[in-house]
Amino acid sequence: MIRRLTLSLLVCTLACVPEEGPPGPDTPPPETPGQQTQRAEPLDTPSEPNALRFLEQATFGPRLAHGVTPPPGDSVEHIMAVGIRQAITEQFAAPRSTFDGLATPDLGSQFFHHAIHGQDQLRQRVAFALSQVLVVSQNGIPNIISTPEPEPRVAMASYLNLLNQRAFGDFRQLMEDVTLHPAMGTYLDLANNKAFKPNGQPIAPNENYARELLQLFTLGLYQLQENGEPVLVAGEKVPVYTEAHVQAFAHTLSGWTYAAPTCPALGRSNPATYTAPMMDCDVNHDRTSRELLRGVWTTPGAGARQHMEEALDNIFNDPNLPPFLCKQLIQHLVTSNPSQAYVQDIVNAFKDNGSGKRGDLRTVIRRILQHDEARGATPPASQLATFGHLRPPALHVTTLVRGLNGTLDTLGGTQDPGALLSDWSQDMGQHVPRAPSVFSYYPPGAPAPGGGGLLGPEFAILDTATVTARANVTHDLLFRATTATRGVLVDLDILPSASADLVQWLDRYWLHGTMSEDLHDVVLNAISHPDAGDLTRRKRLAVYLTSLSPEFQIQR
Image 1: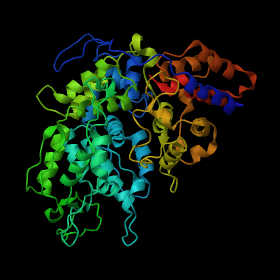
Image 2 (image 1 turned 180 degrees about the vertical axis):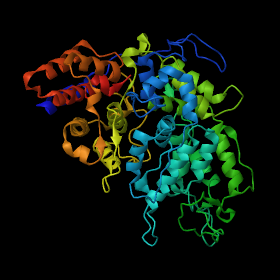
Image 3 (image 1 turned 30 degrees about the vertical axis):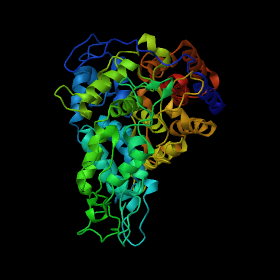
Image 4 (image 1 turned 180 degrees about the horizontal axis):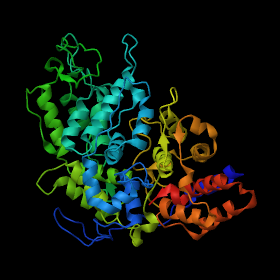
């Protein structure tokens, strides 16, 4: 009965997307670097609902201190004490979580352990967002039977560590590091991408990486205004690049191979290794000049490294890069349908961090989280109906565990609680870090069903099977004894005992005061019914119904 009731509530998520069109540019004027504007709330003295919203956007789920002193840095109490600005500064300096490709737990298990216990919550959230833009999947790395190490895990761990390391750095440097990372070299065929046969005959290099670098990693398919809206000419979208551009970039990026003591011979390849960035080998590089974007030509006769630098500089300085990237970062952290003013403000920060520097991700992330559309007790009233995003599976899992003061107990020998969370996320359609394709788990431009033109990327993996999985996963976390024996421990003692107080607590801490009267009555009536069971079961039922309601599933 519980599962059927909750499934009905969750299916409403599909129907509760508003029919209004996308929000217009009706927010206050964007803030320029160094300029102060009137804010939804002062950044240094956030209210409790504002602090909760911030933690939903900047961590893997809000948590309370529960009497721990001083309050942990990722707790509501700490955010209220130090303010949003200082909390972001602290997160920039937090110790970095790392992945180990040779360790016993799978990378998915390590990911969820970091998400629950890691001190660098904001870095992990940003790196997770970047991993869904600059996509490499563990499924795309072959395991070499003749070597002792598991290449897919070694390669992917190194790549995830790179994204964690560069999450607050320079995007141009990140572009280069990603291009030369051997995991990317394998995944999209840039490694051993030769311009010649062994007999010296020129051949057309593989276009895979060049195409995805332009289409998915940096620019997109169509020209964008700085506010994220498409450029229209005679009512039609304008392509950013042509097939000739893809071919030019493929030639320009030829000649790279896996690190080794020496370069291979003409037309030959180095064996795969994931211990160092790829190396340039001019013997297999096309030195001819090629026309890139905006009429820029590469240097005639230059080697693979210089041509790579020229190609990445050309893309980095393209006007399409800031709106294409910044809108996706907003989507992953805050809302699927940011206003044009919101996107424009973040683009301004990308173009100039206040000191004349382009591509400073630290400034970009700070501006995203401090923007008025992200801050305050609730989204702006004019945008409330179209604001927010469906919690993706990974965040659904971690938000529940962290919200119940959960821990992952790895002291029990063979148990691996992170693996259980990873399995749950996979059941709901997001197998971290095994994206099904270079398009990641879901495309950023996926429409919200019945949304009247609104975007809803996460809805692309929400179907009857994954809807049911959300209900089953939440049920298993709360009701199955085997969850605790596998090391996933949640603390129901933090919840009030009285039914009315319990519903009020969930409204306050899980919905930051936005619970509707309808949901309030459904939960209260359910846990007050004589058949609801004992106190522990009533607590579980209250959390179950609240967390699978559309009001919780759509994070606002």
